Image 1 (cartoon, rainbow, N blue to C red):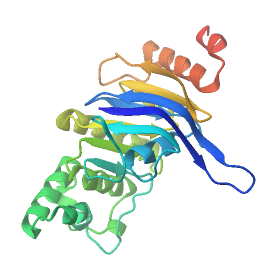
Image 2: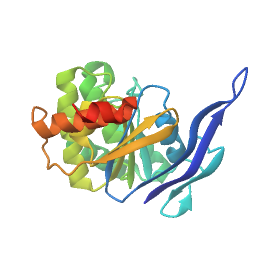
Image 3: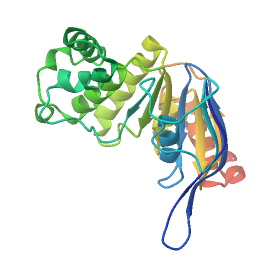
Image 4: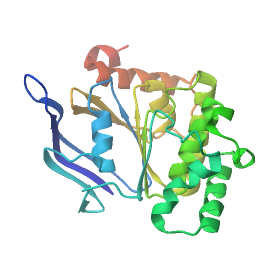
Length: 251
């Protein structure tokens, strides 16, 4: 469904251009849940922004169902690390905001927004404003705002990084439920190994603007963080992340 074909991306800088992505080729199947994992500055968010249509590649192509990505599209919704909610709008107004671009009438926008809030467990909080919601609830509204567009692809840029550990675990569980219910294709950016193992069917590890390696997860959901298989997968991904594969895989 998604293809990055020999994609490179340079950004201008004072001394010399900064190469954020270097000849990346990568594909995602329809309905797949894939995590892009790596340290800050490795290029994972740049890859996500290329797929979102926010920027264009310096070389190569980004394709969705065989067609080049040229600009943003409602079929590809983005959930950012920051909630990015309008503080003067209620939860349901925030959730419905993007529907204006589809030309739907007010009643239909409200119905779809309320259904999306219900999917994330916030139907009863629909009239509340962002300052009246917890951090986890605000991020749920942000997810609802993406789901209300009924996207084929959901792009998530470290969406749970700003919440506490307990809330993060709850949101991860909610996301897996929504993924199974909707069948949406998810590309999820994180720098957290534990999160990637818990969520993804496949983890693509990035280092210095390139894909260092991939790990396919076959363990059933829900995944037990204290299990031996979880620990072994952690070590394997850590090896790809830090580049000392042989040493870490022997541990």
